[in-house]
Length: 259
Image 1 (cartoon, rainbow, N blue to C red):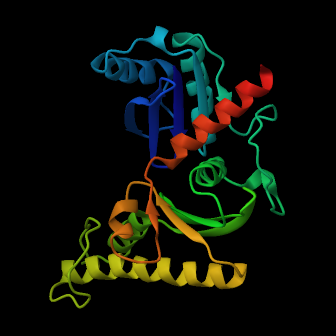
Image 2: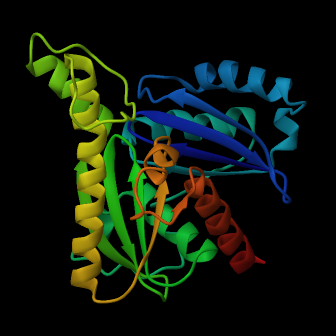
């Protein structure tokens, strides 16, 4: 089985694929100080709940946008799974796509992995919106090439900034409101954040498509993808687990090249 590890700025997702489908998926907060042993204590207990053991895992692939996590995760793989992990960003790992950017090495690993998965699943010219710590809009050509994109503040980051900067404004959760005009502080904040982000999505998608000059399919991913997918016609598909599919495809590509 393959263990995939997707490290984002806020959360880290571990998932196991048995060749036919996903056997388990678990999420933890990202912490660059966590040791290999701490990861193991947490993860192996979750393995046991699904009837899995360390011996079931024969390979590992890791995508991380947090450099401080890489050493501990590599040690986790070596010590507990007896496997040298395939690390996105290492020179020997072939992603199988062209990166049409001024500085290709600066593109986040998660954005490239998403592009690979989106091309595999949907094809054609694409926009992938990832609702993470940042909200990213990534453009993928019909040939699978990564064409660039947009980086905007993430919705939870915006909420936290609003709470910290305005003394009388409370901390709130992301929630769709029926009306845009709020009759109290919390509904007004919720409307501003939610419908403000819908406006951000619709405006940026329209401008990207106009600039690109071709019709494009829009895919939303990340934990908040389903919420916004149901709020606007600008998004055609919601696929919260697209990064894991990308990691699976990259692993398959590199294994086939070595065969």
